[in-house]
Length: 189
Image (cartoon, rainbow, N blue to C red; front, side, top):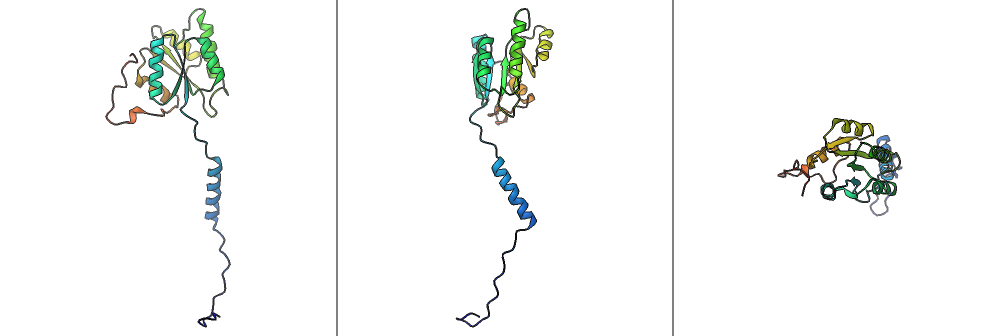
């Protein structure tokens, strides 16, 4: 009984245990909190091998516009060094599959496709850029493990479609912006 007003007080109720749904929701929330992927450290890295300085610079510029961090290489030896030093989500190679260069090209493709060398949880997309003069070169690139073969002149649209086909979304996708066009223009400056 309340001493101030004289009314009878209700007995304190024991706490109500959470329902089964509430317990499951709490478990899901804790799992999501512990399994949340870490934010990526920065833009995804791509390797660009092209012996032509102008073409390599134009390709790197387009990929950087897409939101990637491009690492240019002038020679297969420089590309091998970069492949050994860091992980890439995609590798763009302008290589020849003829004569003595075919062994170097096949070795470079094998190194780019090695599992465990690149970003965890991602397979490295191997995209070969070819002059398109002979169909046999496209077949050789496919046999060497290329995911996509682009024919010169490669356009911004062709690069975006090749990356999409490899399952790599563009970090900054300009195709999603209204009022923009010109993504099928050649990559020349």
